[in-house]
Image (cartoon, rainbow, N blue to C red; front, side, top):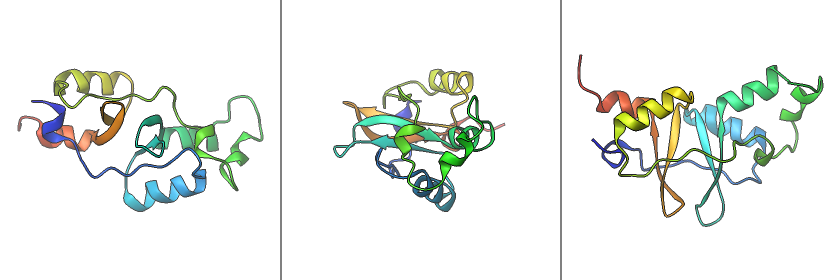
Length: 132
């Protein structure tokens, strides 16, 4: 089975100019685990995951005040993962599942010609898998 067979095509994304507070509201409001960060053409620039936000808020690495950066006007671009992981629509689900588990990715944007056309999540993989 291929990624295109099970991916979610209604993608929620943000631009790098979005604030962290806006991104948190989208994540929690939509019940999703990560946001592709895209430019105006839909090209993938980065990925912002719940894990990134939790690390910044609760586990500041070197700066004791870095947890405060999640308020105010802090931009998504300061916390997004670069390079962002991506999958091709014709990728094999088994190969992608291994990659997602190895890198602790709960969702991966699906790209065609560098633009986000969908997303694949653990939930999509569970729905596609063989029944027990």
